[in-house]
Length: 416
Image (tube, rainbow, N blue to C red):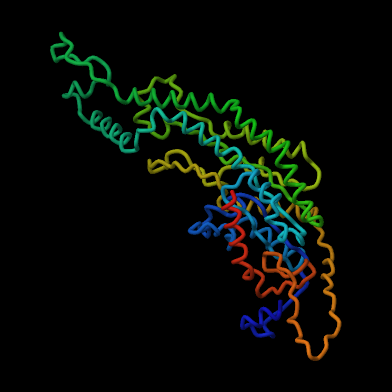
């Protein structure tokens, strides 16, 4: 390793090496990758890997390992968009064998995407009848309402409630009955909301995904990790509810429109309750399968506002806030790191590094024979050479092996 750094032009006196005590490997989806944090950049398909945002929980946990337990290296292998099945397939295919061979700590944050795809399908199917309605359509209707409200008492036809009979000034004849696009729109929206609420009660595909996670994927992922990293302590974060306390309420978002609706017309979805039902079932896996890892409970701590990017409602200035991004924000990642670090402090004890592999010394060669070049130890795939006992040169721990990681991720995504 020292020779490689010197060959790269780094002076020997600037290279400080200490025995590596912790190798932390993180698996997961976009949460572990740090998606949606300010430093995250998905401009190319490999950016999940290098570098992880500094305020992502994986980076914060990695820093804690170094501060609390001595020299360490962090290898974040999270892939945005992955399900537990994709992670399991990659592990069983051997994609991470080298990275795990000398790991002493592994975190797993996976499972949210097992549910997300079906949630999106349910909402898309329910909204299909009104899918051609644009923001411009809604704005036009609201503008018409504003004009109607400002027309004043001299415009009897405009002042009349939409859909009601409009009479002449003499009051003796029906002049017209104006159609009510507002009520028609709200009835369509209400029907879509009822379809979503009904579908989310006990969707067979969502329930099947929960069962597969608990009975197949989670235990199989644990077995695969332990088989490849027998010395590692495994930490698995439970799922949190990103929509806690969030209600999609048409009456709040579009009060002018809703004023024309029947008070009993269903116009809201309790996203928090809908999500909680399945997330709690997913988290039952951690009660069923309790061996071989330390669980880090995120569920109850995340039942507080301001920890994800989700924001639905009207701002104080009247503007609409409609962000349904479920990822943790800066404060959310800080909370995850705090919870993980608390469990790490209670369970992790780095042992002495395994001895470095012994490379047999060849017998002396005859002077007439050429001397072979020195043998190099195999790379683990993250830039740390050999087994855990090999020294981690701190000056280059975060720089070596980036290209190898990127090539590995490209191959994994091509296979998926």
